[in-house]
Image (cartoon, rainbow, N blue to C red; front, side):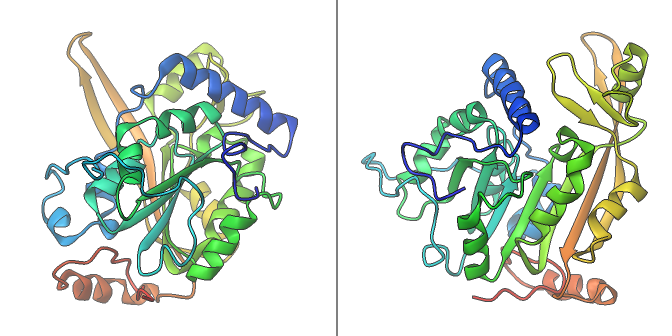
Length: 327
């Protein structure tokens, strides 16, 4: 998509009728549920320590204050795509499928050196994200922290040329997050989406992935209700029309690594027992979590040495093993 103007920044350019239908479905979802349906992902302070300053790494439960702007209320930054000059010397990442900013704002609060590009193909989700107080606050700051826009990065049809150019000028993005997003994509489009995002990273850059895993209790509920997506394995369609996919470890490894762009740093299942005391219900949840590094910036055999070396740094804002920031 060309750099959005004030007139076009809430318009999507889907590459197919199928993607357009998905976007419309998610628009209805956010219109009905609003900004509070998905809680802010504060657990990222613990799970993505590579992006955290030393003070947060040592105490992930530490409270992080919300973003603030100047007291006079004057908008200092324009809500438009950033330039490489504006982002020079900063740690820049992309939250793909950002929804209402449930990961963007917790990351920005925890690390004041981050700039997050946040996109989603739902116009309603982006509108809700931009209406959050913290989004407006960062525009009143001398150094804005985020830019949110409507985009379909799965399409891969050349519509996001400005993002490709920005990543190239920066030497690649430092990180990309893909959190409960890939499961909402048609299985046939998943590999193209991963490859598209991997190419935006600099050598040694981090791609953080989290999604639903096979064996999760909600998958059992789908099976019981006969909610298979056109009979496809592990793919289901919810009542409101959105998709859910339940991944296996080997499947994820192949999906992310078969194109020789990424190496595995971490790939595991995350098991949680969640108790709903009000309904006397215990839920056994299983998610799958992966960290992948863009090839060209590290040797997997050096990961332990890199972590030890990085751990001695007093205040690192980005410490992906093997990556040396080009400032």
